[in-house]
Structures are given as structure tokens and as C-alpha cells.
Image (cartoon, rainbow, N blue to C red; front, side):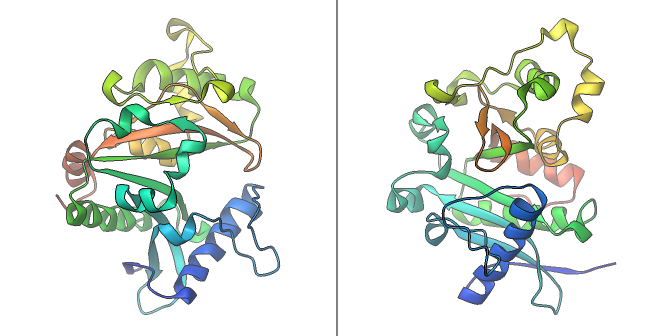
Length: 249
């Protein structure tokens, strides 16, 4: 069985290794882009990167980065001028909650390590980070591949009807870019078929007690349709410990 090491990137070389993996996944595989993407060096990056902590997963005794998470706490967001997802969603309700917040982003795994223990190792690392910083709520955007809303009507409707966040945490996509998710009535949904279309990472978050904000955001730059995910960390840690054997906060 492959053994992994999880840590925060501490050097420029480690950050570049994380950005190279992001390039392979988000640019090569998914057809994304961005103003600061360095195609010559094969780095997917943006101007938020210096403000985030970058959690990296490596094969033990190797420098090869095979998984990443990008993490932004409230104090870091203030220095950055806001959270990354504020360009897509109105976070006023979440920011006014008085809870300690952590934004997750750019989560990906090398294609050779998907569907195994690698993601669980990243989540255990995340649980330790959450405990260290006493985080109350995790959030961030998660993506469906593609921007054809008609083909995503069933899974988006399922998320809206079955997994909508409680009102006190229910952020909304900005009015000018708000894409309704309730396109199919709940009674007309084939829930099993709809769930098959939900990306595995989103399904994993739902198993850990995650819920979604209201409205999707169609991101043509990254060739994705985004939904907003929110997780209460107390519930997440309890479920993670039960399902995956993760660390409790």
C-alpha cells in the first residue's frame, strides 16, 4: 500500500510542484485557464496564491506532489482583500455569522491516485489543520465539468432540493450571474440517475455533512459550473471519524 506525507508547502519549489499538479488537472484535463497561468512552465496560479496555505500530499520519501488543497482563513482573507469565492457568491451572511471560517479551493489529485486512500489522507491533514486553527465552518466552490446547463439540470436540481444549506449559512450566487439550480421539480427527478452525475468530490462532501448555497455560477474561464459548498466542522469531523477514520477536532 502506498504511504503518503501531508504538510503545508514551505518553499517556492513545493509551491511550484503544487501549481504543476493544478496545471495538469485544471488546464490539461479540464480545459481551464486564467490570466496568470504560466503555460511555458506548466503552472496554474493566480494572484491569491501568496495569501493561501497550500496543503500538499506527497508519496512518502518522495518530492512528487500528488494532491493539493488551497486553504484561506479569515485573517488571510482580510490581507487578500476578501475570499476567492466572493467573485462568484455573496458571502455577507456567512461572514456575519461570527464563526471562524476556512475557504477551501483548488483541490485535486494526480490521476494515478484517485479513488484510493490519497483523498482520505488529505482529509486527515485538513482535520488537523481545522483543529489547530479552531475552524467552525469550511466552504468553497466545487465544480461540475462543462458549462452546458441543460445537461446538468438533474444533478443541480437534486442538490437544490435535497442538500440546500440552512438559511443562516445559505449564501447566494451574485444576482448578475445567478444560475437557478431548481430546474426540475423534485417529484420529477430520477434521484439515483441524478446522483450518478454528481462529481465524486461533491458526493464525498455531502457524505461528510456538506450542503450547498443557492444558485450555481457558470465559469467559462475554467470550463466549469460551480456550486457553493458549506460544512460545519463539528459535524464533518464526527462523520469523517466514523466513515474514514479521520482525526477529531
